[in-house]
Image 1: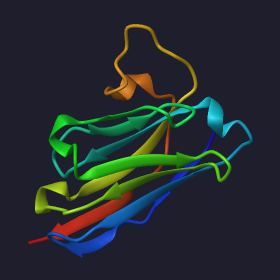
Image 2 (image 1 turned 90 degrees about the vertical axis):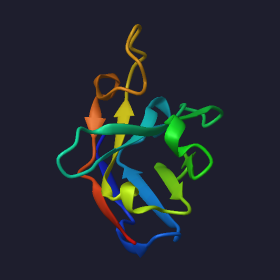
Image 3 (image 1 turned 120 degrees about the horizontal axis):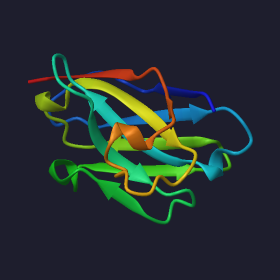
Image 4 (image 1 turned 180 degrees about the vertical axis):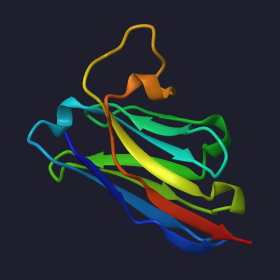
Length: 126
C-alpha cells in the first residue's frame, strides 16, 4: 500500500487542523492504521491508531481529548482531527499502515507498522 498524508500547514495556537492520509490499493480495510509525528531533533512518536473496521481507537495519553482519529474505508482514507493546537504540536505528521498483527509488538511503536507515508508538516505558532 502507498500512503500520502496531506492537510498540514501553518496555524496559530488554538486553531484546528484536519490531516488526511490517502491509501492506494483495494485492500485498505485490511490495514491497521496509525498516525505518528516527529518534531525537529526528536524521535518519531505515536499519536493515534485505529483498527481495521474503525471500531476501536487508541491515543497517546498526552493527546487524548484534543486529537481524533477516524477512517473511511470506502474512500481508502484515514484522518486526524487536531483541535486546540499548541506550539509543541509542531512536527511532521506521518500515517502508517500495519498489514498484520504483530504479537508482542505494541501498536504505539514504529515497529508495528509496515508502510509509511511521506508526512505532512504542521507548524503551530504561538
